[in-house]
Length: 439
Image 1 (cartoon, rainbow, N blue to C red):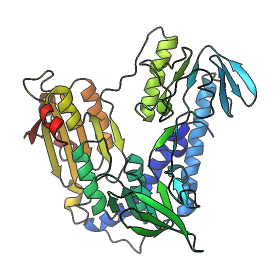
Image 2: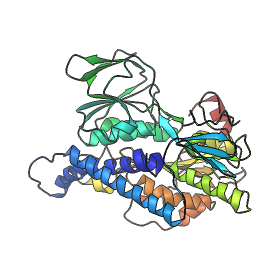
Image 3: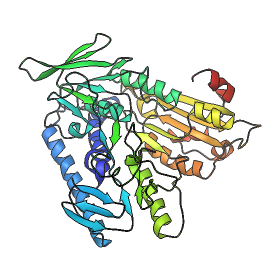
């Protein structure tokens, strides 16, 4: 319970706090490359870390409560159920309303394999509040949650085994991003098991350990198995179908139109429960568009084009716009500009140059095609990728061209200046090429 939803309570915020802390041992190690001598080996007080994280989440929860109170919003805490298109029941009491907005988010799912219900088998929810740091951990999945959690547990000293069925992590992302991140995950010491499916989990004697097996013969004795294999919209037991709201049969998501309206004219839905673009800022954008539509006299559709986003892997990923394949299909032909280099920080003898290698990529509509010269995709793997991508997102929203990037004076010395100096085209990719081959 509590205000703030998944993001504040058991998602983006606590995860990012733990990611910040997991970097610090690397910073201390890097210091030796800059002449510092530090006594002893640093150690982590896991209990103190989790307590500090919990305190910050509690503080934010209080802020949300005060914001709602100052806006004269009535808050009712409990289990809600829709009785009819204009009535909601909470803890046995019914409330009538003109409109209902469903924003119940999503929940982590666990694959139905043998042993998936054993103690020590967890999802991202429990992983953020483990009372003890696992010495050895299996992370199942290749999506953004999987690579983020694999990264920060590894940073705190856990031996991490990342297991996913594909050949690369981050399915749906640009292929150069996927390949580059895969190399860096391995370079950092995360044990990557690509192309493997989980077979079973069993309790191993009285030690409390788990024995994890895959279909490729891998057998691992671990403290925990973390399922990061997807999330499902929270629509069960809300009375939605009884009220006439159409749900997508396979996923259970609320089916909505371009204005977030469900099949019932008085019931709307925003955020992960609609499974459109599952990002917290996107849910906020959907909510604002809905408010304009219903109460501002200004019918407004959420705009999903050019949404910048990040994966807080280690190192992080930043992306905005289309992948190379999608851009070529949409525009007919795109010119690809790409660069890879070691960040200046690691040209000093930190010993981590290969772990932190940066990749940047721009996709530009080719000459002779509609919107020629426009930047329609930007992708990065490397330190500060998220911070850079937010600003690039503004430029792309304004319709920035490659010429504008080239004409911008870079800030030297920074990694960000590379966005302004990628002059040499690496290749041109056409719609015909991606139709017949998979990039």
